[in-house]
Length: 75
Image 1 (cartoon, helix red, strand yellow):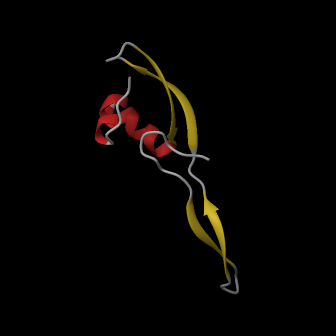
Image 2 (cartoon, helix red, strand yellow; image 1 turned 45 degrees about the horizontal axis):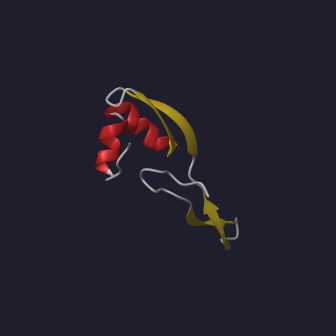
């Protein structure tokens, strides 16, 4: 299952809505990418699966700060 390792984001339930307004169930999947990110504080690369919105936040504040916000310990 596609799931972000740090935030825990995963698929959500949604509806397809036809022209006649008939609603059928479907899934909205999270865009999860596997990335190998350099962490200067640890002096090494860390392999993580993150959603693309998570990756944008990591670019802004850094991986360790992002993990700390969500209570995840990188080791």
